[in-house]
Length: 393
Image (cartoon, helix red, strand yellow):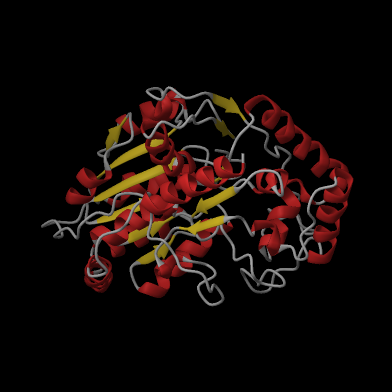
């Protein structure tokens, strides 16, 4: 099981229950992770081997105006993740090949690990899973735009040419199209349709989110927020100051805060938590949630019926913020907003009856879809591929 791109706890949170289920069924699991340090507390009880995995660590380039990278299509994401140069991509693929020689896998599972998928192509049956953003459709000729008015940093034909050159050097199967890289033996895009950035062009069936779905919760009697934020997010000190000055009561878990920041927060009226809090508990007490638009938190809030005030950190989160706004259940705090504007937004959102009513209605719609199959289809696919391989041997 491999994970390359993206940060936070969400990717490992998707992988862990699958790894546990396979282990319980007698299979040997090996994980290769982008970050073994930050995710260590989540995996301290696990007994399978965990590697520090290959991942592209160079920063994405700024555009000609010095602004942070923003992708026009998924091709741009590949381009800034090692796919822009044949020598670079070949080196990354060799790193995965070295792990293959040690582990000798029967099958490969990928959660946002595009180079792993390429390295395994034609060698090992591959199961691709993850949210809609990290599992783009594989049956399109090119990747569709993810946002308008953004120039691509590299033409899709050029990225495909890099992939073809690396695969020819390896004498490995060459994809005919760039999306075709992800035409794996089994594919499981897992999210609510409302949050799928490819909902207009995807033809395959979506699996519901892999996390346990929450039941709709009655709103609390008075406004109260719960915030799950990261201390290293751009502009986070302004957001935290606005929260403290808004006068709206609430609780906060802040990932990786400095000691100085923790001391400053302890002097405010905000309830500060040192550890992540169970979402079912905090959502029961919170009338709205403030977070970075991570998919797991977003899905939990949607199913529980909680409006969301989000602080997007990257394109994936910005697309989620757009979906929440379209649903009428969310609003984004933009990076350029001043503290006074954020304070006013928090106060207004805490009493936003239309958002609260719409969130309740969306939660009811999700609940009406019936129970989720969870990871069952993924486990079944893994065992089918394993059985097929044993039959050949």
